[in-house]
Image 1 (cartoon, helix red, strand yellow):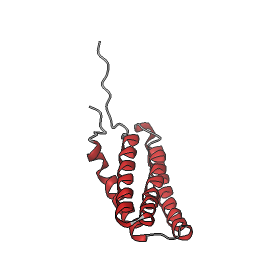
Image 2 (image 1 turned 60 degrees about the horizontal axis):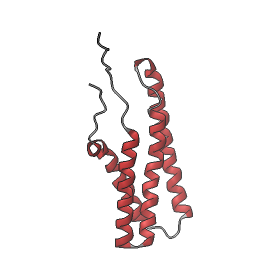
Image 3 (image 1 turned 120 degrees about the vertical axis):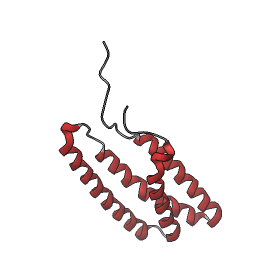
Length: 133
C-alpha cells in the first residue's frame, strides 16, 4: 500500500530567506562602514532594518494559513500583512528622519533599495522550489 503523494503549493522557506537577507544586510553595512564611515554604516543598518522588520511582519501575517479551504483567510491575511508592512515602513522612515542625527540619507535609501532587490532575488539565491512534487 502506498501513501498518497502530497500535492499543492508548500510554504516558502521564510527563515532561510531571512538569514540570506540578513547576511547581505551585514555585508552592505560593513561596506558602507569601511568606505564612507561610521554614520554611513549605521545609516545603512537602519535602512536595511526598515526593510526587514516590516517584511518579517508581512511574512508572519501572510503565511499563517494554507490549503484551499482557507482561501478567504489567506487573501485576508495577505492584504492585512501588506497594509501593515506599508504602515510600518512609513512609521520607521519617519522615526529615522526624526530621531537619528546625523543620518546619511543616501546610505539609508540605497540600502533599502538593495534589500528590496535582494528580496526579489532571494528565492533564486536560496535555490529553493516552493512547490512540492
